[in-house]
Image (cartoon, helix red, strand yellow):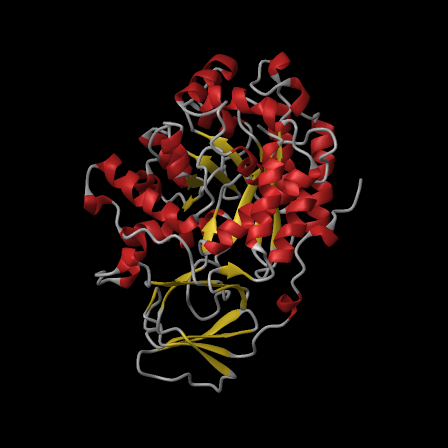
Length: 463
């Protein structure tokens, strides 16, 4: 097994130093209680909130004038497929539903190699950072020959950029010859999958509140994974105290597949395999009944809402209100760039707002703050990271700072609501673990033009 090629990741010598005791002073608006005067950051944590018109109680090394900025907690993306940035708006998959879409793209994705994987991960993480995202979860389940180190490559790219990640060791072992959906040549056997899962957990999984990298285990879906692998993966998760993730409840086709293959609904299948518990979070969660939402809440199973992807593939609406009322954590995800065709977290909040209001046919049913909660405290709960997604003393200093300088914001009266309602696209600054990662809208150490050119050349091989 080759070591990840870290020398090919961006070089960022600036990330070694924190800025001492920094006061983010007098923001235009901030999503925190009694913090109109800003917050103080030290050692990667928020150490003080400052009331409007006041100064910090303790000495500080430097102020940062935040008077042009709306300050949110760093956004948290809880479901993505980085590699899919290479097949955006692909002619083979346009205007298809999920199963047809997958069948069209699996043969194309099977050509994925380490260099393409590296550029896909880099581009996705850069896009996420630029949109105010401080923590990203990726679900990678494709390991064609020669790409054994896909997760190692993702770790190297994330560490170079300084973004927090939960990287899931995805898997597929149920191919077409066994009655599954993926082609035979893109699946692995269970022993290989489980051995590599243990290797990645041992090498990278950090259980501390300051963790920059965590590993989760993520069999892809009921139609691509055997029962044996699902059970063994759950046992491995319990053994190593790491989280579980999979796609579930995404389409009616999935319901029909589970009924025909397993004789039950997807959630019953999950419960039979020992997956219903607080370590688990699910992607999509669209086709759950009200009673199933209550079951998920009782077991504290999280659900990642993927509004743009659900709309593009016409999969349906996630019952966010019912899930939250039942006590299930609900987060937000951009999902794969071949179904969303973007990796923009702040834009995803607007999609969530619009689709949820359309679903419930009520503007009062889902508000601006509800959308923000999905991408902050809700997503943090899905990933088991209560120290993230909030601006409060003791929370990690992950912050997204937006300006309202664009024409789209002219005339806006509520700065926080304006970010969602007027359609913010990029953050001006992003801080992760107390360090600036984005300044003036650009991730530090990244040549955007060069990245666009390199990624574009890699994507051309997937035409």
